[in-house]
Amino acid sequence: MWLGYGKDRAKFYDWMREQGYLKKAGAVTEGYWLLVRSFDNKYETSAADDSYSESWSGGSGSYTYRCKTTFDYSYSGSTHDNCKGEFVENIGTASSPNGRYSGGEPVTLDLSIKANTSSNICFHLGASLGAAITPINHNDPFVSYGTDTSLYDITEKHTKSYIWTEKNDTNTGYTGMQVTVGGTMPAGSADGDKVYIVVGFTGGNQIIATAYEYEWHTK
Image (cartoon, rainbow, N blue to C red):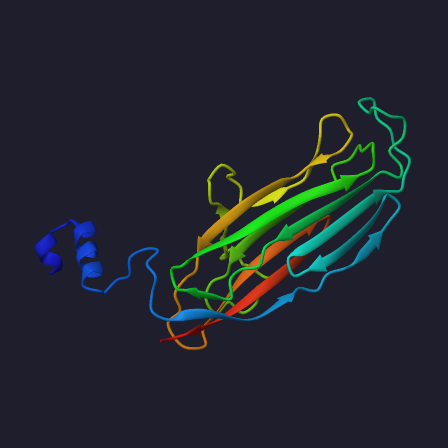
């Protein structure tokens, strides 16, 4: 059959898909993923040195990173005399994924991040939030090796794979973001295959992550 299409590989692959030898990209397949559990990674809950006092908390779709300055500091562009005692409390939330997906079915999550701050704030002490799908049968959902598939804003207006908080231009607060991100669940091939949807919240030098573990069932 390949010879009949000459060098036109695209038409040949179209024919293969029509015959059922190849699955169309994004096509829903037989079988389904069933959520079997969700769990969070291990992370430090507090840290302090001569400059900052930090704390991390949360999991299961709700996360907090708080950082407070503990040293005397001022600079020429500041709107106030001293930055000691200023704080940022970053709060990230993510909706829960579905309990069941078909292979090729869209996945969407609502992500939101904001920050409460002291009335004056000098420093960039923000956080970020994102989500991804691991490869099938990945051994550790909290270690990506660069092979995870990030979820992106379904409207394509926000082009990064994560959202974040950042200091405003007047040193009086922080701005946040919210998006609905999406991707496509892969298809399993054998009963017991596993895949994870992972939500990750990063603040300071810590990551708080939640993994949703799915197991493949053939029909």
